Length: 299
Image (cartoon, rainbow, N blue to C red; front, side):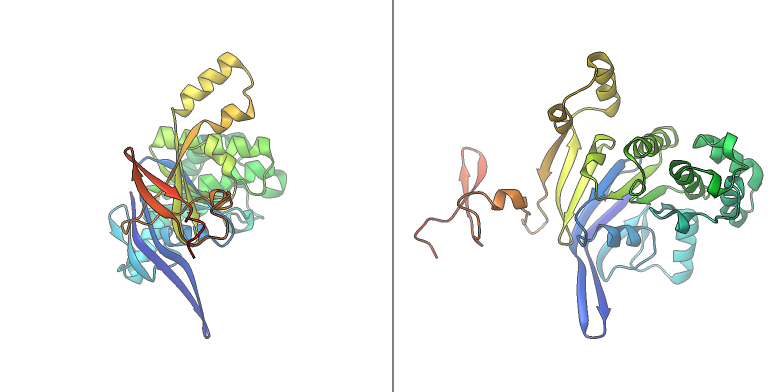
């Protein structure tokens, strides 16, 4: 569904250049539910904007559903945004029109497709569990309900790819869980590919794969040990699980790029022998690649 090879994005302002992405590589398969995490300034929102057709790459390769976003014309880019992707923003002011009802908000984008907007809007509101609230204006809906309306709007064009930018950032823990469960439901029932950008590492409990970005490159991936359904079944059998058990739901792997580079977790570099060093010894030992601090007499 998504292929990023050596993706580069440079922002220019007067004499200043900011490199937001520095050769990022990423693959996302059709039907995946995955998250992208990273600190502020890591490049995760820049990547999401390019996947959504809101910004163009400076160099590298970026294809979504077989479409080359680097060479796409402006006309084709508009069609891509209308037909291929749906977007859910953290700020509901970007998703919704406050003086319209939930149903009227969902009907608006359907007008572009020339479909029976009322029937389709009701179908989407039912899919997100808000059919009974369809006549309510936004001021009469909770934050979680507003975000559900936003998800219904993002599905109005029947996208192949759903992008969500910090969709739970302004919600409490309980409501966040409800929204994330809705993403899982849509992913499972519609076969929809969903990419969620977030700063919250605990989101990993709800998705199958988490890609961490650092300094404009993919630094690591966390893959689920077993299916989410299996975990829920075990939770029901055993009751409340400890925090330690939650941490074991995924296995983290460092990512090696095509040039053989990898990013070592910052916490490892703070360990004794590696702190404030800019070199490591790389050795092959018993079928493993081993990183060692340089000898004390090295400069």
